Length: 379
Ligand code: CAA
Ligand code: FAD
Image (cartoon, rainbow, N blue to C red; front, top):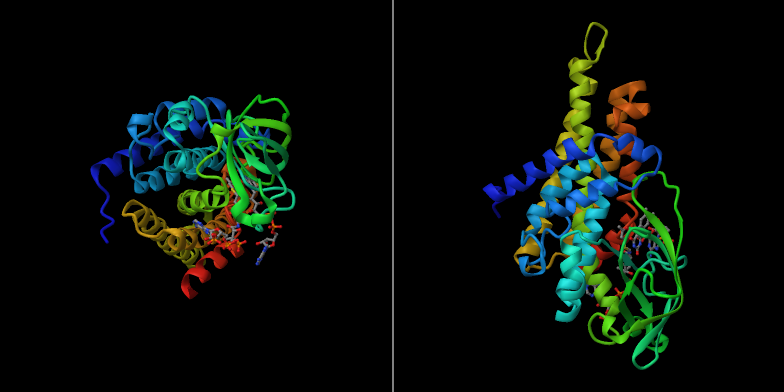
């Protein structure tokens, strides 16, 4: 395995870094404080090609590999994890799922606009009583011949009020269990589709998390993705790649906090010297850097597996499990390195610490990643 980055990889990384510094950094504290969705910034990300990075250019995407995506996600997440979750959901859950499993008509109708960021999408699996236990879908999609009648509630949906297209997982045939689940493309504005209030969250506060309510929503049959009963496999398969996106988000949060800690340690003086001269601080930085490097290698390994068509379910889960713990540990230590200044908003590390936590919860909690990994090990 050779992780020597190509010229193209370095160019994407640099473009994402530049965008994050110039467009996301200004205002990131205010957006977090006021839970403001980064609408203008997301629009620009679409224009720069960050919302459909891996989609075939014939559908308006960037045609890039997963390694490029990991590099860009890291850079964006160093500065603004609220923006990077929008990027992750749109790229790896919505665009990837549609490109891989949608039919040509669905791709022409939806993917072309999603890949360019003209519109954004949402992925709707979780419910009030079906989070980790994702096969326990209560939302129903009753087959009415030419359409499905959709009823139920989805919870915690990222891009909940800003998306135009929602990939909704729902139970059609209870008797068939997870093989009776379908994935439907639901458009914003369909009659009977309501969006609940925005969640007031600990972290990624700029992102847009809502519950969604469906009451007798008529979804045309042609909006089903794949064969009848394919919905659960669609969700699981799509999430395998999504977890690489969230692993890279966690990596970015950790490396952002680490860079701030190094800078601060060289500036702040205590007992007559920079705190970076105290071994206790040096050891914290050494631990952070080592863990981040290991997390980066796991992310790149998972991306490489995906790009080379190897199985990436286990490597993606490992990357997410490890990188999310590194994000949590690193951000806590970055606050510690900053002392009291780390506890206030203007130094950024407290936000990164709050943002880190979600990476251990969404797209499968850390406990779920261990289930995925151990099943692979033992099969
Ligand atoms: N690819 C394709 N198919 C898969 C698969 C994969 N990676 N993993 C499982 N399947 C298939 C299985 O083969 C099985 O089908 P068959 O019986 O036909 O073989 C079917 O799915 C059911 O699998 P399991 O028996 O393993 O199901 P389970 O009930 O034991 O659950 C689980 C498995 C891994 C725990 C799963 O429920 C899970 O991943 N839960 C977490 C849900 C999750 O990650 N939610 C994230 C929501 S999106 C999100 O969070 C976005 C965001 O925040 C930004
Ligand atoms: P539960 O499943 O109730 O888990 C509670 C605890 O029990 C966890 O610690 C869990 O690890 C543990 N646990 C559960 N089962 C087991 C087991 N078998 N073994 C060991 N431990 C177990 N979902 C979407 O579909 N789309 C989105 O866009 C989306 N965005 C989100 C954004 C945010 C900000 C948040 C908070 C959530 C989002 N989610 C989204 C939902 C997210 O994926 C779920 O919250 C997550 O999968 C966990 O489900 P739960 O909250 O129901 O927790």
